[in-house]
Length: 223
Image (cartoon, rainbow, N blue to C red):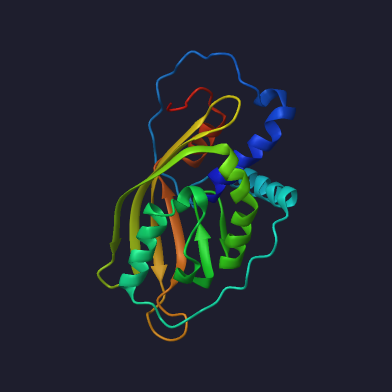
């Protein structure tokens, strides 16, 4: 999720000054290639390296203020975490806004998608702080569909299936349409900070490179 948001914003900032990011001439349509899912382990090293470099560049350009220190509280029951995750998807559209309920997460949570992996809730919050004002400007008509969100029988994980769609306010009128699944690994619900999400892991319904190419594909606006 973070990767799609970061690349969208970076291209929006660079578009006016880079000729190759101006609207290209019409292309002859080609049959779509077969889609395959992707996770961090199956994404190629060049794609991961590209995303890492662009992420660093966005951080340098934006320089967000430090986030508030993460706090812990009494243990959360799995049912409360499940309800909070559902609200993040449905009410806060967090796949587009980054607006999560931080109380659901351990300060040392690891966040992983097919192109990027890092540890720390504070780092997640810092990353999103730099993007949110620009996302409001460049992301048009965002939508999140939550297909399912279920607690595992042992109460130690939540599995969600979703779809995120939006048009991007860029000169070549691209659109993002991506489905995937996320597994939220939970700490045992006991002790200070217990029951919270300690591992966030996204799998996309297409190869990572193909997902990122949507950002530079012209004329895909839904409207």
